[in-house]
Image (cartoon, rainbow, N blue to C red; front, side, top):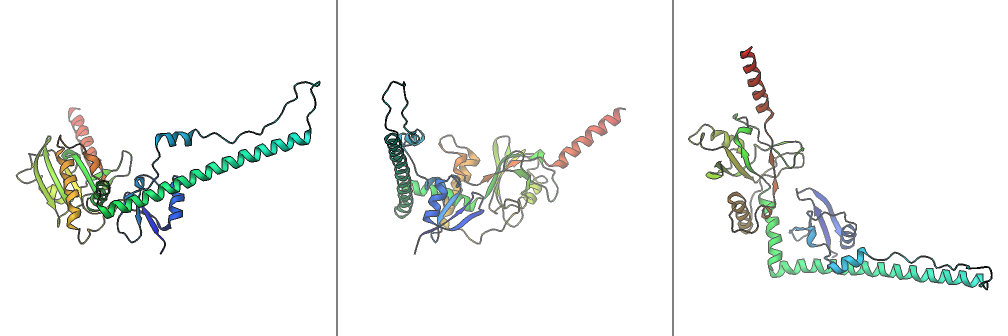
Length: 310
């Protein structure tokens, strides 16, 4: 049976399925696959960053490719003076056409050899990926663990401000993937959260049956109410591109939990001796967006104060 491949984006959206190896090579050569897209050999159940499948050229090869000379121009002869012996016109044309054909043939052969070289590098890259899986080599394990983190921890937010939320029984926890995006309400997430007093972690909790927003609201009215001013959270529920919260998977493999737990601890505690920090967490980070109701209340307070002074 021929090998087929599937491609999906980092946020889990399926981009293509049942691709032949030749079609995959074509998409990679054309630059239509981003480094952060994920590629899977159908039936393997394992996904890897597209960057692992892309050919890796040495600096010398890259330079030769970029500085590759264009096809040689047509060679023509000029008449320097009327007194020179006139060359045979037919012979001159024949020589020019012959030279052009040879140059174009050489150029096309160079392009064909370059494509064959890239195909060979890609085949070797795919073979190396499968080989690293079979023998559990370190590089393969690191890439696999990154994907396992993403499959378990889908989203997270770091050091969100308590004062940027209007604390109701069902508060809005608004976040954006980047500044200017439409905010997503993440109050239904479940997972793990931390409460901070400044930069110090004072409480670690979990949310399973009750959603994140409701559990944090309860902390605004319990013994911790005046002791925290920021919070971080790590969510397990998938979030669609439209901001819809999905369902929790029925189960996770025990071995998949290890890299996920390590990533949470490194991101939350920021230990100085860990060389890699936030990059180890492959989930989508959300930037906090202040609840518009907060701004309305602040504006109303300012107007009321001004009216009292009049």
